[in-house]
Length: 419
Ligand SMILES: *Cc1c(COP(=O)(O)O)cnc(C)c1O
Image (tube, rainbow, N blue to C red; front, side, top):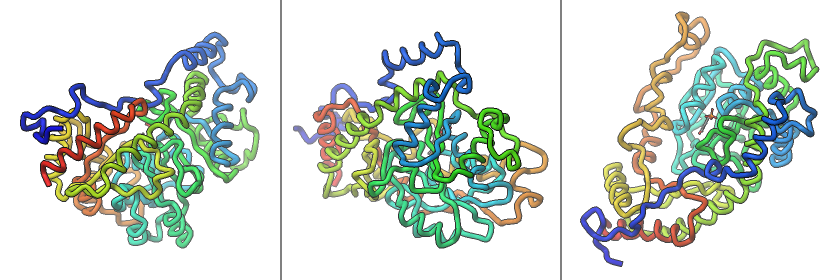
């Protein structure tokens, strides 16, 4: 293999560029088409027209209860809805503070604001998930919950996070949107916290187009969440009317549920491929001079969706990513041109600006909130340092071993040329 980099006019490692593409969405085929068509043919799109053993939504919930080993699952319209339902289920609302990581999709913070609570932004560590050591300094008398986010399929350090939460009497809501099927220390993600929220949006591991799932061990959390997600819950699910309140309709229809149910049958196969491929890449990058391999808190439970590593500086990460792209390996840094990365808190404009939909300044103004949250672009310097120095390669589940080896070879080639 010639050492001259493609960016300097050498031959690229790949002549046809290697991309990851969608995971579950790229597998949509006859089984999905058949299931969704069956729902259309039945003319019954609403789950409550069906018995539980006929309804795809009910069967999807049953499958999640089984996977997670939890007694309650609620199919909803999206991942953000699942987070909102989870927060309401846990009793979080106006005036409360909820700790979220500096690196997560903006929807995590949006869900907190939607229930009238205030997102408090905490640092991530080199795992790119919530730093357990940074949590305590953000806890105030108003703090009610922590939302750890398993970014890029990397499990957050749930043992340490739940220990902090227990010490301070806080609830834990896991955001599992990017880590469906992952685990930490042998326990499924979503089953560590008081509740877990999944997304089936197109970019996630498997998809129902749009859709989500809330899971919990706590019956009252489930009932409150169901009440939030259905303005007429008590008609379909008679229960404790005395504790009911107004909800919005965030239910999942049978069309989406049918798609999601078939896709769920593909989840473990997709992850067994991504995990194996990521391991194959990461093993070849161990100890390469110039780059620092990422540290997953649990490589076994990690979904294997992305292989990342750190460069010594942000400028070097940029240079490295450009050289890698020229070798035919699609990769990213947090400073890509075009759309700013909405996963980084510095781009959460309506959070940093305390944006409100109404003239009362809800939920930030003193009539709702008695705390003192302050936001600044430089408030999480360690998170920005890790993110700015990171180069990430999404893993495609249909890649061959040779594809994975090409990724490793290209990274090694660039590293050798620069370090
Ligand atoms: C996608 C995503 C969400 C929101 O899910 P939707 O289904 O798009 O509402 C929440 N959190 C994270 C980390 C996500 O990646």
